[in-house]
Image (cartoon, rainbow, N blue to C red; front, top):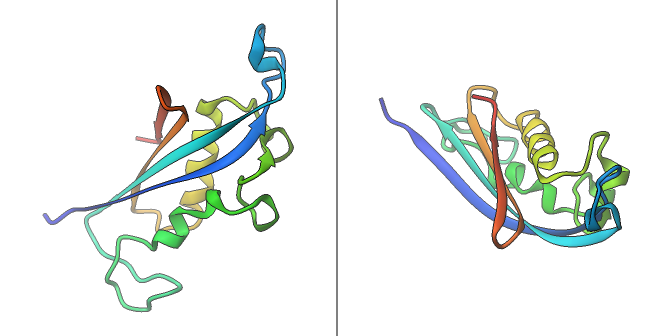
Length: 127
């Protein structure tokens, strides 16, 4: 069975603090978050930008977190203002996954990797 896995990597800058954390992360600070999206599918789909079934999904639908907060993304925002959960990298990856799945076909297997620093990252999928 043919399988395609689409990958994209992008960054955004955002501030946050972790409420209740016993340490420096309780204070507001910022990161340049690096995000990798991997979208796997055994069929190709159309998108709102291309009516023919010729892509796993559109890169535009995967890169939404890099838009500014006024456009629904996270760039140059305070994560505490846009997340209802703790602002850990784990919860951010989970939220990005959830919101991305609302934009792409449900048959796609999505994996979201979020780097909070160059040496610390988390990977999230719902498999």
